[in-house]
Image (cartoon, rainbow, N blue to C red; front, side, top):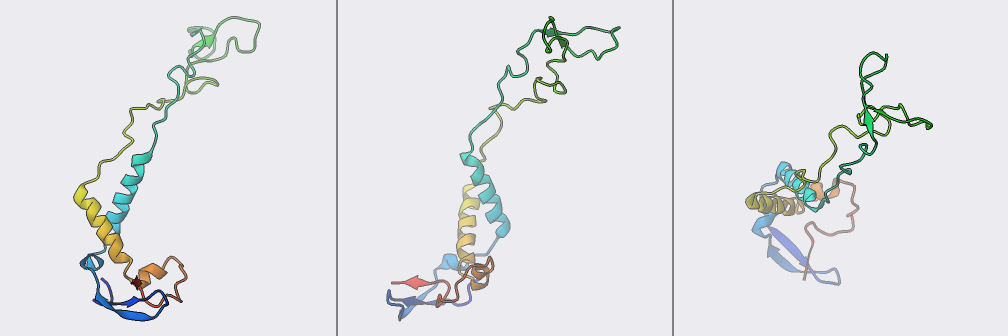
Length: 153
């Protein structure tokens, strides 16, 4: 809650020009939990979808050697004459293989936020801006500000 229902109005020269009542929104209840929830979810609404290529790690012709060769049954690159032949392929544990659970573009990127909650968060944040202790808490230098909230004509 704000400290006073009346606030001073200052002119551009810095002199007191009068008084006015504090708007009702400045006395709204402060709910940092709702402000944080709304801010976090609104920040998710400007993300861009990303994913790995569907063919990443799957671009080699590989098949398992089966059992009886004293090697793991992971598919292996065929052929000869190169260091790649005989190497494991496709698996997420293999060098050059696909990742586990490849990322997809159809993930839920955006969040819907209740309109009433959104308005409540704005009112709560505005009310917090009228409390001098909260405004000064993050380390802002406002010693030369005559009054918080500062109203200019």
